[in-house]
Amino acid sequence: MEAQTQAVFIFDPESHRYTVNGAEIPSVTQVLKEAGLTKEYSSMEAAERGTVVHLACECADLGINVTDLIVDPYVTAWRRFRSETGFTHSDIENASWHPVYRYAGRIDRVGGANGKKIVLDIKSGAPEPWHALQLAAYAGLMAKPLAWERWAVYLADDGSYSVREYPKAMHLQDFSTFLNALAITNWKRRLL
Image (cartoon, rainbow, N blue to C red; front, side):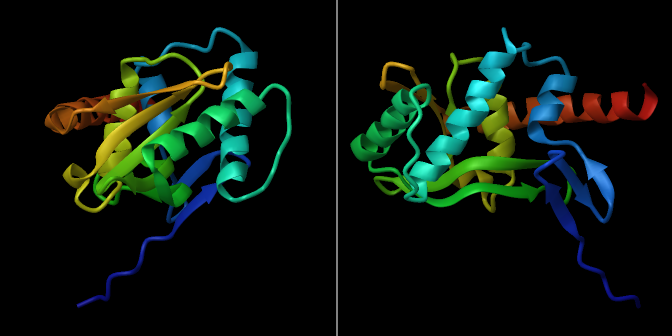
């Protein structure tokens, strides 16, 4: 009997590519986009703002002080969220993959508050229906996915924030919808 070999998972941050044993696998974001479930950013500025806000919040969580007039209100909102909810992270921007369904993603934050285990995504735009699917896919990357709360934190340019908690009762339906999107994405990649 042959010994099983350990899969080699690699995330390349420059190309934002995920591979397992050299074969590319789709990211959560790619799946949702390629299946037609997300809308295009209204401008390149919005997409770039989201990237910069994520980086600035990561720096804040790591204790690195970054000052930028554009992102400062978002970082203020992030700090307020953490302070007011008691959220603490155990992981930041961790890349992982699902060995059965073969998709990957980088969860913005894994952590908790008030005894709750939380998978969290940071947003600098408005709530969208597909955010529930994105967070279900991220929870699916965790051991015991149903044990995790799914939160989206929406940071605003006035220093305020809002939180959308997606119900655990909807997790299986949301994850199933994501898996359907994954099947469509894989089909399109094979045939188109």
